[in-house]
Image 1 (cartoon, rainbow, N blue to C red):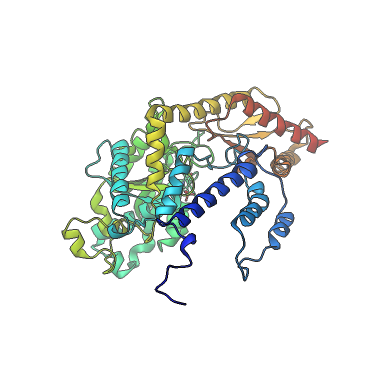
Image 2 (spheres, rainbow, N blue to C red):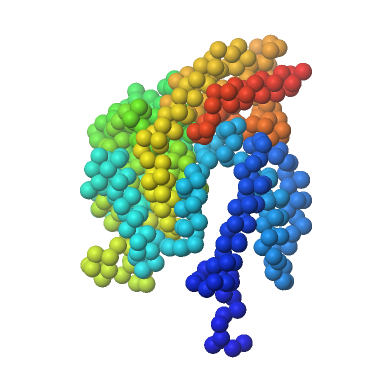
Length: 503
Ligand SMILES: *Cc1c(COP(=O)(O)O)cnc(C)c1O
């Protein structure tokens, strides 16, 4: 092959040639058409296809054929085999998890993010993108801390990563300040087995996961009981803190939750911050779910106290309606990131720092990283503050109304009486009474069957969770398009599935 000639791969990459442009437009238009036909117009949230059926549908295609195929045929196959059997996140009856319909503005931004393919680790791979991400991070710091100057942050893949980063910084600062120990260089000291993290029993499982990954072990996490609204019980928290101290143990972090995954409950953040100060704990607030309330004048008071947090997790792929994945990790004191920073000669040489060139790799546990900040920026610009708040307020209003509807229905039992966000947990109560010890297992069996049968029919995608031994159903109503008649329709289907199972 003569390598001096025009590349024969020209049409496969974006570039200034007419040939490349036409192939790009054709490809993107095709993808849009297939998406519209096989996904956007789906009449119900799921096709209901079973595991074996789907496995065989996807079995036939060879992953890497000897000779490439036409994009039209490939995308058509994806439409039929994949998109048609995906969960329709935009459907109001798709209300199982913290899994949102993405904003159209964000989808437009996604085409730019992937095509421009900037990588956020170093300035020379993402100059303008680095600047914009920093600008958005400082906006977030102003929102949550009331002051964008001393705080800092970075975009992450989501709550799992943000929670890990919060507890990582908490661990390293504690050991540095208390024992003069540098974890980054020396690993964990012998005393590490005395370190303890406190959180409520409704906190996200990634707190435990982070403790394990940080070499402290899952048993380092002390779970505090919750009150009747599934918020951390302060009395029990105080008791535990005194007890841990009396045992010579080293509590070093309190992970409060602003929006628990099951109930959307928000720990009393101000009271938590008082304990954190009193006991010298790092306060991490996991606001992956509830962080969006900061934009609602009506509801942001629920986050009062968050400004005292040493670090905050906020997810944008939940209540901020962004495509997966998009999250942020914020810290009150920007110098904390020094605990994390490494220098790689090829990415963020120290001379860059002297010249004031920002290389964001120093603030992240990722290296190559997507420019996800762009989709949040475009969304905020297009939707605007008041309409955004309106969306969130609407879903919270619907959740209140749904809770009332469940309370008023003798066939249903509401489990979280005052939902703070838009998650409503409930269960179906069988018509036929069963005797004493048989009753709970029977109720559990029916509620599990309801969820399975609705998923199989594809009409409603609900979540299940276990509360005090009871199997419950959960509606997570993130979708701003949901109406009360959608909720009624979902609850009718639950009752219908329940009575069918009983019969
Ligand atoms: C979703 C969630 C997480 C995990 O976040 P990912 O974005 O899925 O990694 C952590 N904490 C809470 C409270 C969550 O709701």
